[in-house]
Structures are given as structure tokens and as C-alpha cells.
Length: 109
Image (cartoon, rainbow, N blue to C red; front, side, top):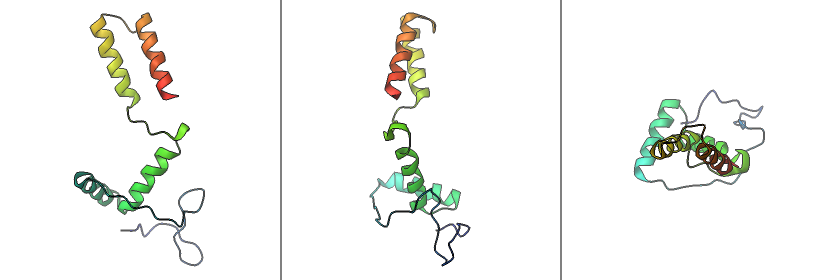
């Protein structure tokens, strides 16, 4: 399901939505069934093809600083920090909190 509103060049070919042309090489992946179904639903909701959705995901992840996928969100790390501090009965301004915050910062670099 290609987005019919996508810009085209003078020859009627679709134009890359990115700052550079798309590669002529095609990459295919097999997905777990449940993920494939979620991808289909997302594509339908956004009126895009599954390939467009996957391309957007890949471009987003691989153009981030350091181009390494971030599997643990910063929010998740901070929630974990807060639980650990609570168990240790330490406040957010304690030395323990500062050490954990530095650890989170280093994970992001």
C-alpha cells in the first residue's frame, strides 16, 4: 500500500523522503508472526506500506548518535534507579543516586 501522496520526480518515479536517494539494494526480513501482525496493523493505521514503516524504523535507529539501538529507555532506567534507591532508603540527592545517575549517563554514551 504505497502512499499515493508521496512526491514524484519529473518521470513519475517516487522521490526519496530522505536527504539522499534510496539504495537500489532491497533487504528482506522474516518477522515473528505476532510482530508481522502488529506491523500490518500499524501500516494500515498510518496508510503506509509495511516496508515504509520498517524503513522509517531502521532510519530512525541507525541515524541516532552512535548508531547503536537503545534497548532500554531512559525512563525505564530512571524508574529502576528510583526503585533501587527506595530499597536502599536513599534519597534522589544522595551519593548513591548520583552514582546511579552517572551510570545511566555512561550507558547512553
